[in-house]
Amino acid sequence: MENEMRSANTEPLHKPLGSSRTFPHFEGLLFSPVQLVKKSLADDVPVDIETKIGPHARRPLKLSMPIMISAMGYGVALSKSFSIALARGTAMAGTAFNTGQGPVLKEHRDNAKFMVVQYHGAFWRPTVHQLGQADMIEIRLGQGANAGAGTVVKVTDLPPDVLADFLATTHEMVDKPLKELVVPPGIPEIRTQSDLRQLIHHLRLAGHGVPIAVKLAASNYLETEMEMALRAGADVIVIDGAQAGTHGSPAILVDDFGLPTLAALCRADDYLRLNRRRDHVSLVVSGRIRTPGDMLKALALGADAVYIASAALFATAHKQVLKPLPFEPPTQIAWVNGTHASDFSIDEGADSLARFLTSSSEELKSGIRALGKRSLREVDRSDLVAWDSEVARITGLPLV
Image (cartoon, rainbow, N blue to C red; front, side, top):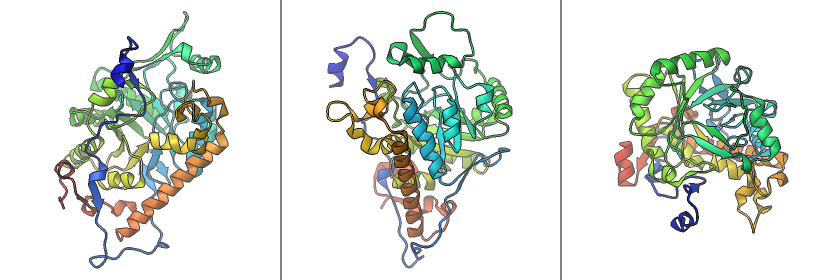
């Protein structure tokens, strides 16, 4: 089918919402329940899942749960109303949303309780004022579904008011008609570790001491790139696995680049422990993390928090996906140029997302109680076994 689509067009085939390929993943793991060795806890026992990101930053990010909404940018992917619903829904649940590569809006700050501002290389990247409103700043060097490549948005795909939001904040003169809006690969001015150190210092000042994160597409250079980021002063490492989704990226980058999320997480955690940095930097992982079970397994393997995107997209859309159906895909309620974007209800979307996040956090607590524990910080690798031989090899966990 994909080759048939390539036969109809000369441009690279763009693929949304991640790869359909099967990689070793969290499904190959199971938690070990306790009965006599240790007792599970009753449903009314309080469980602490509060999360601190960037513990050594002057202003750590303190969340009600270890679940954040990953970068899904207004204009480069989502409609304005949908991005506002993400901000509002996360605020209702007590966690954070990420502005992504699109323009940072006043409405984002007005509706969010905790806002992660993503710093990228495009001319509309956040201003010093917008960085000063962030609760965490994330430097985007790569992403799982797009490798270390850039992003191109055709101006003809954007409504005029959305294009105006892109042009409202500029770092360079736009003196000729635009045909495309380009997010370049990485940050063009960052060529060395020293350059990255200077940028992190600048962002730390602009953000008044909030954590500075570096987002990497998981690759076989993972440990080397983590070391460079840590030496440059990063407070948080974000690892985006090969199964991560996106609004649209060349299919070859979606399917054939990167490291699987599970393998990347294990390597990242091993590296931090081996170098005695595990308590000094926060590790956030993303890439096809969809259920509370996925989340708790990632946290047990060493992540301090998880980012979710596709799961949050459909949770926010919830019953509103019925508006485009049956003649249009359900995502047409969410995309900036979606045929039914104007039909989206911010209030309904925010409520749906808040319910999903709250339900997921309560499910995490149920799993932690079943392990006989009272805090997320007590959950670790010893609570897991592998039933899949390849997953056992990757994680180093016992094969049942």
